[in-house]
Image (cartoon, rainbow, N blue to C red):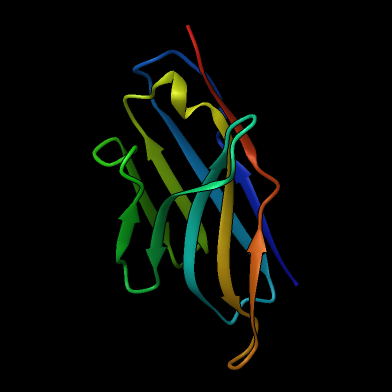
Length: 120
């Protein structure tokens, strides 16, 4: 089994910054891709940023130029640096990962989420 644990959420003023972390642990052979999703009240969960094992990244248009996704493969940890935060970034942020627990066994896993609130 694989566990994903997010941290780093909180309350920040508009224009401020936060850094989210997601630590993966458990039966990990390799990690294929990791993603950050978010879900605001009354809205569907949306993909915010993604990174592959090769380092390729992808961002939602709404966060391009403000958010940066990165990973530390040695620590099996994913990060999301969020700058110039806006009230509309307020949401629960979830870590998601495609993880191989053996050479041929892959699963998709979710963290429990961390709340980000942008408000003055």
